[in-house]
Length: 142
Image (cartoon, rainbow, N blue to C red; front, side):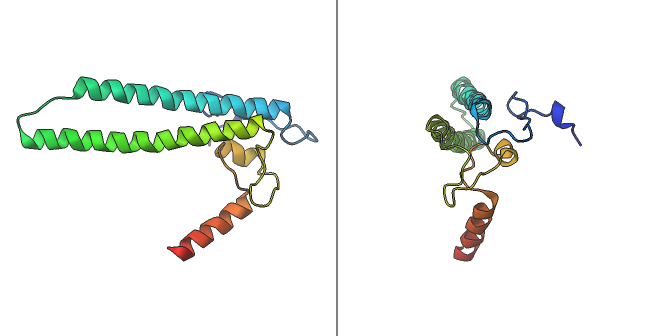
């Protein structure tokens, strides 16, 4: 198992909570802002790489099988980029929450989401209890 000190997400070391410190203080907000901005930057760079790759690799293969393979690869890449585009929007809305001092609190019940949960999923908007209930409801509706 990796030592917590050596683990980093998007090049940002995890926040070390200090006993008795106020939840979502300025240092914590700065930490999550840096984390989210680094993540967004990585995603944007990946989008740029995809555009370049598709431009460079775009060929009109005479063989229908080769053309179909390339189209399938491009389709898969575009679906991945679409998911990343949605994630970028979620990151941007999370950065807005930090700016408004609303970050780190459950949007359903208002309790602290918790630093450890936010380290694992920086865009989380629900505490673990509300997320669990949400997933149970989702399964029942399916």
